[in-house]
Image (cartoon, rainbow, N blue to C red):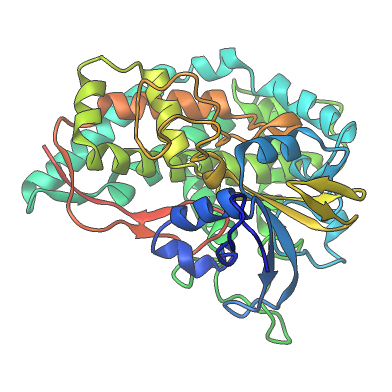
Length: 421
């Protein structure tokens, strides 16, 4: 029997693992049960959607505990088991550990400093005018589409997918003719749990699901990265891939890993956050009026919309030693999964967390992670989101339910039907 803090019997531990649950909605009510009664809870990992059962993991629900895990790589490692809930194939693990996301200090720090030299605030700020022009053009096209029909448009198809993709392609320096590849690779890697997405249904010769992050599945992306780097060495430009291609400190294979990380993480952060933020504004017209009237700052609005709809739902760490968290004994090698969306609604960290408040300050959301792995592209993501929300049309109302991604990792929207005007 499990007792609650008040001495009564606590409710059962709800399942927050099954990716199919997230196609309906993020399970915020269950997250609250976890925070109140089971802040660090054991979650079984059954077979789902053809993926084999795993050993289970500890789900970390409270804001303070999530921050503690993210800030302590010595205890909670990104390298030992990588950063996805499902265990990678042991044969793939050495390959996956070459990515900065799946490393611990000090190796992680060396690579982060390298890519930081290419991802400078100055380079990003120079894209602001282009980003603004693109947002305006996409919304004008969406308004024309809505006006020519019944007044509705799918903002994911008409605006946000293309907006995120083209902005990233400009920053990386990907030629216009190749930009569709970035979206294809992103959907293949991110959407592998969703039967409608490009990464779903891929199996090996034995009929087992294929991890889209395995070396075999990334061969085409890595080959393209090498070709693009060679082109940038011959034809340098003011973009991130040129900077990386001319960086003499990158070892063999590291540039390709950076391209993978920037393509997938850089694209999908904004691709997931942007429609989520627009949906929140459409569902909260009073907040939208506040933003349009200039009575909520663009930066505070962006942070609140990120808190409300974090692009990433979960990240995994692995206990490097025996420890204790949230009153539970954690064994060395146990999987720890931090629940970003739960931490962002924790009453212990936010006043009125279920209220959208575009003027909220302070706003210690964890939508960009924390600790040494805090999102490297957060500045660029904020610039894009701030610009997009500022240029959204005056009339923005839901026209039907949003289509949600089947994923316990990415808080994605596949469609967002709205009335525009």
